[in-house]
Image (cartoon, rainbow, N blue to C red; front, side, top):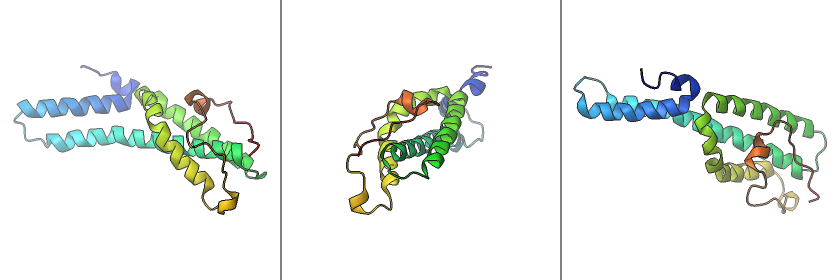
Length: 155
C-alpha cells in the first residue's frame, strides 16, 4: 500500500496527499462516493493541524513578549509555565506532522502580530510598550528551544 507509513510519520502531509489522490480518483471512478467532500474533509484535518500550529505559536510569542517587555513581577512565573507548556505541545505536533515545520516561517508574521496585540490588550495607551518591535525579534530556533527565554527589555 503506497504511503502506508506516511500516516504514522507525518499525518498532515498524509491527509494532504490523500485528498489530492481522492480528487484524481474521482475523475476516473464511477463509484457512488462523494469524492469532493471526502477530499475536503481530509484537507480539513491537515488545516486543523495548521491552525493548531498557528495558535500555539501565537501563545508562545505573546508570553515571550510579556516576559521581555512587562514590568510585572508576579505573573512572570505563569508566563514561563505557559511558554513551556505550549512549546511541549508544539513539539509533539511537529513530531506527529514534521511537514508542519516548514509552515512555522510562513505563519510567523501573522502569529507575531496577533501575539503583539494580545500582549498589549487592556493596557492604557501610556502603558503600552512603545518599543515592542513591529516584526518578530525572535528566531524560530529560539521560539522552539525549551531552554531559551528572552532577557528583560529596558523599555
